[in-house]
Length: 173
Image (cartoon, rainbow, N blue to C red; front, side):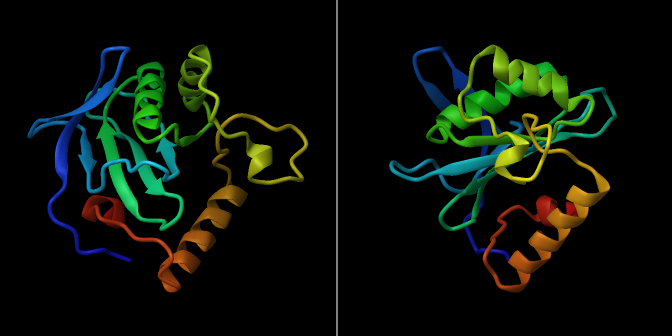
């Protein structure tokens, strides 16, 4: 469940429209355990919050699709539209990762921001559940999908096929 890794780099991604670089800072919203590697595929699963002071954090888990290791996490209070742009920057940094944001209520603002920049790797719910009648972008958080996700995560933890590096992430599970 937990891989023993050195302390993560903490900082933020900077995008000057030519290249994206990680800039170290002690109070940055992003932790990176493994920098993107050429030829690797990643996904970013994102929980969307309102972005109000004192409210919940928006959180993005960045996973290597081959090893299912958590390679990075972003945790910050930011409005849903800005969160969408941050997710696109992170996805581009991680080799054009697949982005899977929550699509309930405020998540729609995040999805709109992702679509506004025409990011091509935004997942549709029909890619997760083929029998869905009205596919939408993102991940619907319903009682059914929540139970499916919890079951899948428990199975992954039990058979040690997913690895987390962030203690806060583990505590939030």
